[in-house]
Length: 457
Ligand SMILES: Nc1ncnc2c1ncn2[C@@H]1O[C@H](COP(=O)(O)OP(=O)(O)O)[C@@H](O)[C@H]1O
Ligand SMILES: O=P(O)(O)O[C@H]1O[C@H](CO)[C@@H](O[C@H]2O[C@H](CO)[C@@H](O)[C@H](O)[C@H]2O)[C@H](O)[C@H]1O
Image: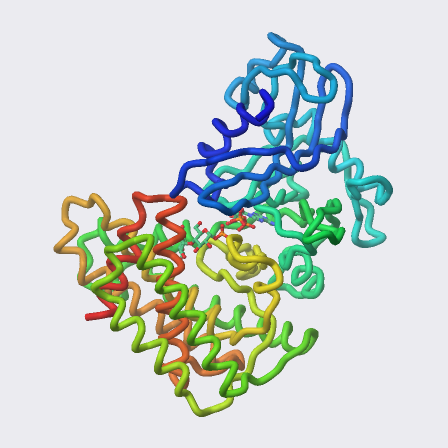
């Protein structure tokens, strides 16, 4: 490995966005590097291959560089190290350029210019001009990607794990551009990646309207849960921070987006064979998860029975493009209502698979799991964990019901009429979460495991 690759091999595993935390890194290789700014302060966009356990994943790194000893003090937390850069042989201090507004401002300038030439293409979506000269800040939070907020105007989401092709987030957000339930897209950045000998235009980042009045759904739900646990209440409905009205409105917003997607993009109905294939895919995921996380084993029988039941469903199952990784952290409440974000799907799954048509009940199941997460998360380490357990169940039940009612009210399929399908999707999401937490936040692994234990009775 070059000096730069060795530095990256030490730095990447510590990043929140790195999805391979469950296994050691065998090798790091810079697959492509695109210099975007040269000179005293450099910016290059790297595509980095990270090899683990016999397979590899590609990640995007925005690499800043400057002469040794010249890193500005406000960027010291973003330092990666000092190394000789491969092609110039120069020794430089390299750092995470996402934190340097003097460099990230250029990305916005080039989108504003609709600069579509060269190996990295910067595209503006509409005729509406993009404001430039804004300073960016990195959004903090539990993210799989890195989002930069420019002033109070835009969010540039840089995709970290790269899969060849157009990112579904860009594809679906542009399809829904006129919807009141989506933040308006303004542009994107793309470059070519090589995939099995083919050259594929690949989305690196998406520019979207910044919703300045937005509060994250996970934060809002968490406030309601905290109020319930700390306030000595006997039931969620009597607590001041009751969330059920918001949950109901969120259900309605979700149904509207599903109806919009179904009206603009292809739809289909699953054949009995396709339903069996879906069930088989869930069973394979369960096997993989059980191998990786043996504490799932006692519940494998119950989970398997739910997936087998899906294969036996005899009514037609309508499918369409869906969100694909729907949870409370993907929705924000603005002063006009709920807005859905992040149509990327599950970041660890290849793009082709994420673009497959699926049942909208999969998204419903994702959000139902999230209500469960919100209630359980604050039990971890709580001194009154045992006493609060039944309140947690009541909070989750009340908000799950409200969400389903809002969803059916706005014209979505009534979740209560599709219990078998919904249960299979919910169990599948919980199995996915077990792997997600094992790889990304091992201290949260208990949440999906406890839910599965409760679901399995
Ligand atoms: N357009 C936006 N306006 C305001 N906040 C946003 C916007 N986009 C994202 N956010 C905030 O950033 C968080 C993470 O964004 P998201 O697109 O879900 O990234 P990731 O795929 O990395 O999880 C969201 O939960 C939300 O709080
Ligand atoms: O938002 P992302 O696209 O990065 O989605 C991934 O990360 C999520 C965590 O941020 C993860 O969601 C899980 O944790 C949430 C709380 O942080 C919870 O609300 C969700 O229900 C739970 O699934 C998501 O699964 C993952 O793909």
